[in-house]
Length: 112
Image (cartoon, rainbow, N blue to C red; front, side, top):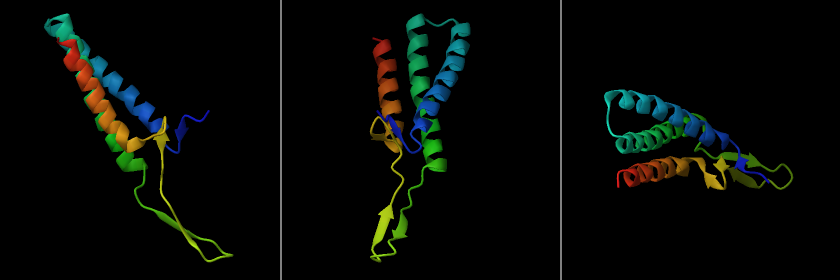
């Protein structure tokens, strides 16, 4: 079963980098002495925003929005091909919004 297509693994990389940034922010907040619930809420929100930001940048740098045009030599027909990089059949650019909404939602639920 193929889970990713094209540069879909960049989404996993952005999630890992976002998690590392969230861990660093969470450890800084733990030294301040805030409640554990607030610490976890900030960790989830930082993870979502960092992963969304990294995913946005990786998509901007590595996933092309331009369509390439190929011409079939026998028929002369033109074919447009775009970069359809995806992870779990969801395109890379959509994962930016998923990271931001899902993790920020988890952070808000943590404060309840």
